[in-house]
Figure 1 (spheres, rainbow, N blue to C red):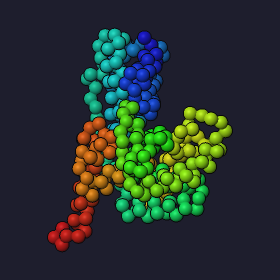
Figure 2: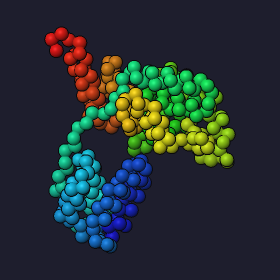
Figure 3: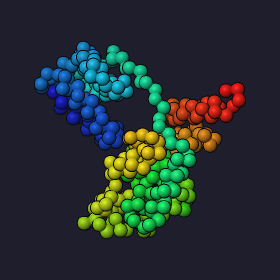
Figure 4: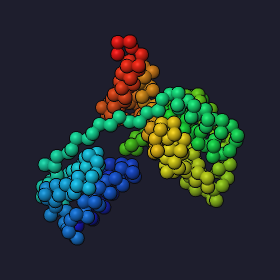
Length: 304
């Protein structure tokens, strides 16, 4: 089977069988399309060997790709050939001897609780003027930080997914796994104000009935809010507070996790809130908290 055709069938497998998110499938497809670009036109997947794969990763190293990118591409190749072997498309798996480069461990960007309080207070003041977009933006930021959810989970929320009385939201996470996450009174107030005063005005801008009719967060044209708009919102509002040119929604998720641990929350509880499959992923935030602890010690202890 031609390599490009195999990649298409593999992507379909990831979507239909493994039920991975569209973003994850796009990442696999992007990596494997890059690999295809190093092969001869019309190359058969069975003809790809270990040297082809090593050459591909070497080129990525030469052009300065990050270790994390190369590690991800190695993983993509392994997943493809494991599937191809199972489908009897290759006689053997050439990726088994690939060495995955160790990722450089970088601690996530975290905003201080004071900086976030000031930011959200500013957003609340803007929303109090009654502008539908300001009401929506305030609700979005409060949910990202208050519930610690991913941007895809935020944008995927429907009105029916919220229980404002109990302060919970039902979100669809990675691997199409549902979980219920709590959020606090400030987020509940912001969302309630948006649903009552902002969302109807945005929904009225929708030209016709659409699948987005139940979406919680709406764009300027009344359709479901997209991740790019949320990225722009967070970068515009949170970036200056963190002294960074580019800050994404994950900074609010990182901050929520770190502040939960700083406040004494159990690591398992934080894992459940964030929807991490592995506790090891959540443990990254213990390193952030440890750094903050050491910093506070150095500043405050007379024998530091």
